[in-house]
Image 1 (tube, rainbow, N blue to C red):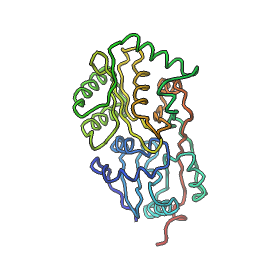
Image 2: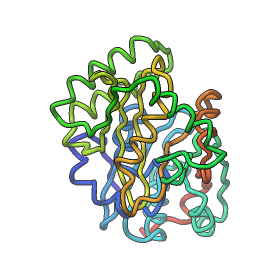
Image 3: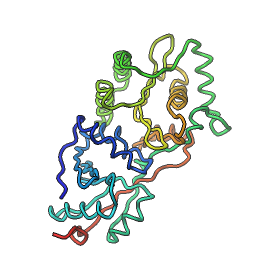
Image 4: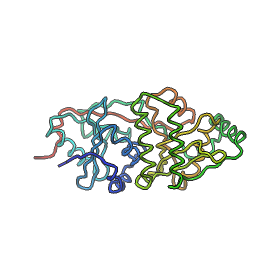
Length: 303
């Protein structure tokens, strides 16, 4: 029987291995995304029979379940149905990748699936973001060339623990010039600081771009399977081409052998961000669905 409890940062080391069972390229099945947004979405977890289950409370959806990590899907579905049946609550799954949709709806034939475009992840070929080759990426390449011509004394290097103070100081300057009311904006800043304060625990891949020895941008992410996930990316727009240079350098540094794709996450429905992410020409958008199931007791485990 599933017993959920609040997800805490100290749970990350003992749960990390489960994420290697994801088999998906969506960002929602990475340690970084799950733990960075655990407080805003009141994430709870349960480990049962060798599988990891998450229950997440989204404002628009209420309590939802992610697809569990480890074990077999049929048994997962039965456990979640049993949990919901005992509490007289409907089953909601989110996010469900497109390639899992048929299997889920075969088990729950009375389910409804709704795509959520604002949460689709942007997936790129790693080689495209490393060098911006070809006509379609000429605009990004031009921005990089502008950066190179304008700022001769630049460098990019991996963030070490000794650099954390400088990165935090840059983040403070970045935040001071971008006051926004959205709760997600402030949570993003808070969790970026948490990642920096707990650098060993999160174990992310960090890189920073410098001009004349001063930080002008940094990125934090991780590799799961064949995909590099960029979870955090902050840059000073006063430096021409800074974002494009940061994207390329981060990809060159961390998309090594065996890493074929880069996931730059969703656009949250922001038109400016959507335009920017499309300009890098993703190889595909990773579709995500909300799946709701009526009458969960039809599918629960035997009492």
